[in-house]
Amino acid sequence: MNTEYALIRLLLQEPKHISELASKGFNSKYFKNPEYAKTYDLIFDRYTKYASVPTSDDLAEIEVDIGDEDVPHTIEHCVAVMYENKVKDIMQKAIMFSGEQLLKSGPEASIDFLRKAINSIPSLDSTSHSAEISETTDAFIERYHYRALNKGKIIGIETGFHEIDKHVRGLLPGWFCVIQGRNGQYKSWVLAKIVAHQFMLGKNVMVYSAEMSREEFEERVYSLCLGNPPRAMSLGELNAGEYNRMQEFLQEVKDGKYGKLYINDNPQNLDFIKMDTQRIMERHPIDIIHIDSAYRLKGPGKSDPERFGNIARGCKDLAKELEVPVVVTIQANRDFAKANPSAKKETQGSGMSAFGSDAWNQEADIMWIIHRTPDHAPFHFSDFIMDKFRHAEKLDSMLKINLKEPILEETDREKAIARINGENPKAQKMTTDIFAETSQAFQTDMGSYTVEDDEEEEDA
Image 1 (spheres, one colour):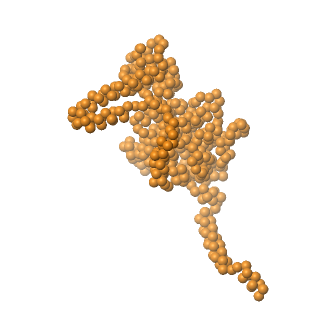
Image 2: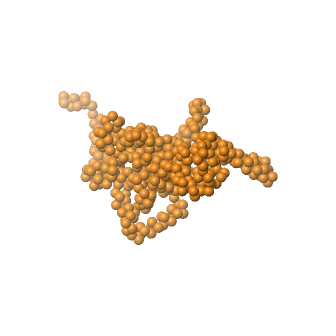
Image 3: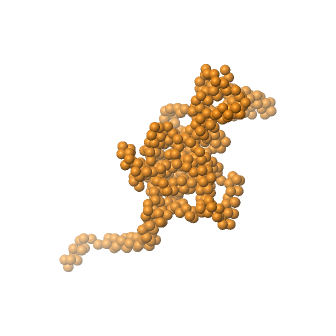
């Protein structure tokens, strides 16, 4: 039986296995028959978008006969055969071309061509192997030297918030970062600010928006990149200067001046996100993945806590497997702890707990809480609390969020609190400095006296 036909039949019966194949790097390029390759892509597209198989009408558009007979093979066997055929095909072509190189440029060029061909052979081995630490000492010392040479520098991907970047030294590959807050706490705006900063720095950014449409998220990013009022952009009320700057900026985007920004507004589930990102990675590297409203993704589980727990673990696995930071927003709920007394409380900073599962906090490398109190709201300040940082101590900061301008920036916490309390931080600092100088002078003068001197004066 034709192996390619057998694989298509098996995938039509159990399309969920296509996510396992994609995670190992298998794709339609392994098919010699172009019609089977089209069918494979169709199955991939239907499953990632709708978690279903192609309809008979979909298959009718492809010139290939898919029967109903049973297939005496397994998916693993079919993939192994097709992989072997692919390797043979690559090597046969390489040997032929290396012979041409031998005649044209000599043996060194021929051998170099063969070496490149061997290195180009794709790997379907996605398993990790155990290693004894004596085998990894060289790699360890290289990592240390890299950190020592870059001491105090940002070595990961910046968020655009200076104090946070200085503290964590940038987001590193494999990190899972969570931003949580209640409704109306501007979680998506904070995420969009991070996305805009990374895009402007030339990073390749992948955004999966489970809540907003692509157009809405795109508008938010452009508002933050340009500093244009988001309301004016959405209503088409930019003034002439703002409009001209937007035109110039969009031309710069088309010319490739910045990074690449991919936005998908129908992510469905983590299997789709993994496969879609890997598809993009075949053409361009991806530096970071953002998922807005990760709790809205579909996932296995009989209850919300079980489903959210699986999504949280899946996000961490995604970061490790693709070797990129993954940043997500989730919903916080003040009443969750009361309704679920047996559940571990997620956060302490504002009395909130993450909605659905404590797995968010367990899996996260960084857990942020964004919380705007009624007292802070008139001053456009929000608490931005690093409730967990797996790799060092935590950090509390504040954000100034004024979407009318728009301003979304990190603010010194003490100065922000002073402003909220109606104090003058500059005057307060001057008073504190004067008091410190006076105190120091008094202590210096007192240093020339002793208790005995005082007693002698009293006797006299």
